[in-house]
Amino acid sequence: MSKIALITGATSGIGAATSHILASNGFDLILTGRRNKRLVELELELATKYKAKCLILCFDVTKLEQVQTALDSLPGNWMAIDVLVNNAGLAVGMDTVDSGEIEDWERMIDTNVKGLLYLLRKVTPWMKERKSGHIINISSLAGKDPYPSGSVYCATKQAVEAISHAMRIELLPFGVKVSTIAPGMVDTEFSNVRFKGDNDRARGVYKGITPLLPVDIAETILFMVTRPAHVNIADLLIMPAAQGSSRDVFRNS
Ligand code: NDP
Ligand code: 8X3
Image 1 (cartoon, rainbow, N blue to C red):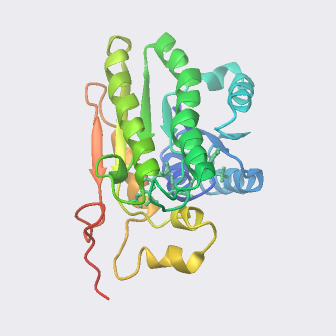
Image 2: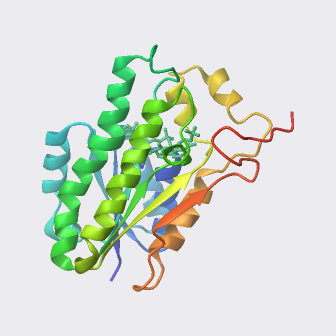
């Protein structure tokens, strides 16, 4: 029987690449995000390429009611989620605390912390009930190594680390694994979103280095979720070879 994975933020970057790799490895997928057109295109592509069985749920993770309604609409057999990839997230703006936009902070906190929690609140009881499941929360190097002008984004990812650590212990008696993966720089739409559509500035982030690609993270997630039952890769940090810390990046131009 195929395993079921729910991926938040499947419309782009790490989430889209993870959808491909899990589909090509026989998982049935619940694909989620706000951009329905992309979800429909992805579903078609995964069905054509890998004969994958997919179900689309289009919702905004920051809206509790949307999260609850979407997940409650799942047919019974799709509620048996084996893997939750809690990936939807974003950085908005890069400012010192004294000059930051409050609205940017709220978007990051609402998406990266509250949205992640809304998914966990809904899916974890199903996993507990079945005494089986694996939660992969996407953290960041930023959550381990905060940097100036990134305080709120870094704080949201530290929150992801703390929530994951606590949940790993809470869920020990239920056989549910909780893992974090903390990537450094990955070339996705992340910087375009952070710099609010200033694509030149976004491209500059990856100038002179070979950043990680979404597939690098997706392959790592596949490895994590296919370990034997007694193995949990609890906390994984992955960076481009050219990156040594949030701020130490060796550029060749
Ligand atoms: P992308 O911008 O390419 O993808 C972000 C995904 O999140 C999109 O699919 C988007 O879908 C979804 N998303 C954002 N806001 C919401 C929302 N309110 N409701 C539902 N879905 C939402 O970036 P990445 O792939 O890079 O980001 C994925 C995760 O990886 C994030 O948590 C990010 O913080 C983390 N990360 C990224 C790194 C990087 O360098 N790129 C490094 C470390 C961590 P849609 O717009 O359709 O809703
Ligand atoms: C994204 C990586 O270093 O741009 O989480 O914050 S960084």
